[in-house]
Picture (cartoon, rainbow, N blue to C red):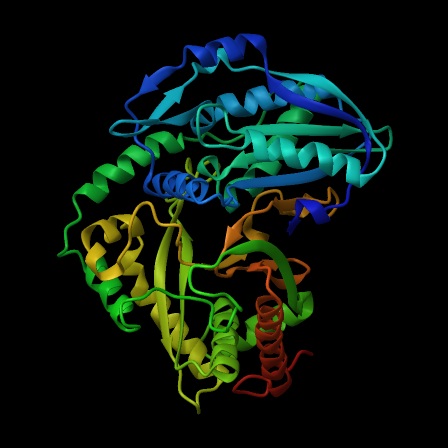
Length: 472
């Protein structure tokens, strides 16, 4: 999977089909039952942020989308049945939230009333015209409030066809996007071939969220995670992490996000770095993080590299294929000295990740509830700490099809005052994707930062780590 902005994505043109809820489903949505289910902690934060951004006339980058291609002309009717089958499989997709007096209220459509139909929407012969259809549709439909917040678009031509799927973030995380690619293709092919759909059992994220809240309610300030987070915050005078370099923003200023991609290592280089890391008592991810830490020290004069690392919370086989936001954040603080080399820093990173596991089972927002005086966090804030994420795409089911089907993760617009980072290891190599506030300083410094990290990794390879290894 590659990541890009919707506005930069290139694919086929042809007949456009919009997949919408059928009349029966729209009628059922009008009488959707109010549920006692609470949103998860991350869903709550997402809903809070959406409303806070609207109050100041800004837009949150709140939807996740994917696009892929298939050989030949796609059958829109089979695709509509595919979407119906897929949504009926995942409980989180069967409802939405409204704003109630006591908080957010979940509403669910009965699973048997869920059905999608394909509607012809004309023809497009260039990408500008296609984006003019898809972009506004995703912005309109992909909402967590008051309706089913996702949509699918098909572009059909005789030689090759394309599929877009967009969802509000409350339904999905990055791993879910990759699972969706695999499941939608499997369901489509099974329906087209007239065979049973072969997918593993799964569970509902909505049910998971209730279990998460019940467990989190038992957490008190005596939990080791609370002390770990408090110590992390106080190491930087009570603040959370920010991108290490200047972004050219005044306090409180937010700008439209633009993407940046920096290739760090090709496939053979990635494998060689992994071998060296093991020989040096580290891991491949810890070496990559160490290279970023060196960039923070060398370019920004930082004495520590600090970031929040997303970790998945899928702990059972049934949760692995589930749609939902199965993510928590752990705080990472790595001290840096002038004489530290990449190996010593990588070993420190590895140990820091191990010690931070004490935070894995406590939602970060539950931590903030308990010690909000430390963080100064308010639920209506437009501030969200940036992340630095690592993903090994080789481990995701269906990844062997990504290149052939030109599978992309897509982002839209949005405003922010910091940089989010996704480090992606794929079969073809390792690269970084960032969402960057659109200022000249930010765009220049983010690229310089990760190019420095890239050069550090190449130097590590050239030296053969701490030993005599080499790329060959």
